Image (cartoon, rainbow, N blue to C red):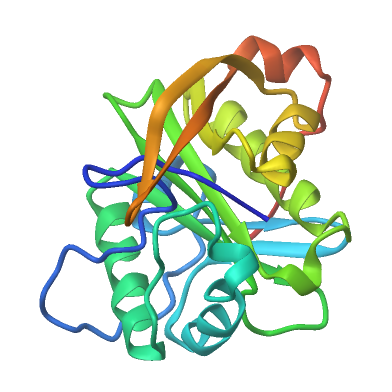
Length: 225
């Protein structure tokens, strides 16, 4: 399951690191939810934990997010463990700059992330877009939906976010279905919104407002300090 986050060049989660220098990051410390620029909190669910990515996730993410079924509707991810290491370092740079956050999805009983939920801010903090991808062995388990609700609760309850956007290829049934079930509203079609090599796909633009989330009476996420 995957859905797109727009980037300057194409759709999909923003995998391409912007820094040329390879940096091996240490896991960020767990901090209060109001200080996410200093480090993402742990979000706990019944089946999964959401946390900051760390170097040890690179091999697992490379195995899970480079398969044909996962990459079908997103921009190409890194093709090597080293590429995912650079991506992980980049996500930490982006978080420290207050531009984006990227949670790793870690099923209970696992130590490494098997998917990501990525959020990128579009303005001073009230509007953002998100993209996500999770390994196909975990499709249909409810793990993604649980993790997504935890992230949504964190965003709308603790960060001042007012509007969250998402893009999914029209033919991406799983991605569109997941966004609909989470309470997002389809606003329209972005014609030729995603280009993958010679292939051009239309996308659905989805949005969720803070009042949409609050109206669903979702529980506040469990933050593990």
